[in-house]
Image 1 (cartoon, rainbow, N blue to C red):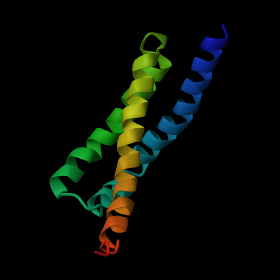
Image 2 (cartoon, one colour):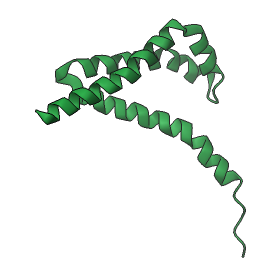
Image 3 (cartoon, rainbow, N blue to C red):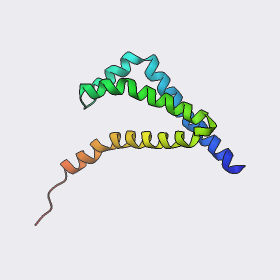
Image 4 (tube, helix red, strand yellow):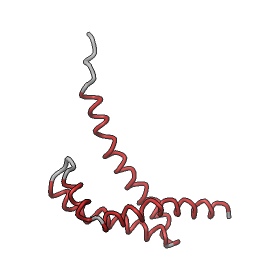
Length: 105
């Protein structure tokens, strides 16, 4: 019973993340599209992500709500959050590598 309670609590917390994220992208669609086109990737990728991101977030919400697919919802959440974390962290890593002084010989 305790494991089930933890699973429900984690799913609820993830729903608190994904539902507002998807709704915000849909309700403020023009701002979302404009923001994507200001990112450092191609216009073609931005056009695909314009529809893919809200769709993926809504699919994750459905997966987390339906008990039979909660595990898949957790997996999809983990993958999506890992991709986002890498996207946010990569410029920091590349910036640190670019400004690192060469080793003395």
